[in-house]
Amino acid sequence: MKRLFDKYGSVVRVDRRQIREQILSNTEILENESGFLCSLYEYPLSYLIDWAVLLDCVRGTEISLEDQADYTVCLQGLDSMLSQFASRLQSGQKVLNPRDVLSEQAAVMLVHGLAAQGVSFQGLKALMYLTAVPQRMWLGALPLFESFPVFNRMKEFLGESLGD
Image (tube, rainbow, N blue to C red):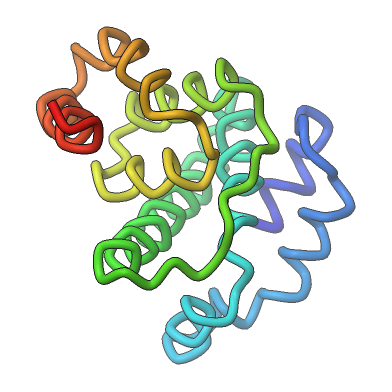
């Protein structure tokens, strides 16, 4: 993640200093499994929005072949962390308040971009929660996801959430 940020950081739409500090102070998370598992409970999970935005911005640039592997690993790591967060949400452990840091449209486009790259339904669902976008907005945006494998699960999830 640090290499991608250093190389493509100029396209980031969020606080560069904040992301740099997150990357530098949490390199041990990526270096060992126990650090990663501890981070799932101690890491400020609302930063996952910033990490998702960073990866989405990098995706919007032309990624060199040598950086593609790093990008793929970072995307899989983000998906894994979001999925873990989603499983904690399902068990009723809401560890933070959602952050309203993106406009509704920007949040929908961020989730759409990650869905296009194959992020899991669990990861997308967690990101939907973290962005604090109203459920009715997600329902209105549902047709954008029709071509993705997660469409039916999103439709079912949103229908259940709205009590339909």
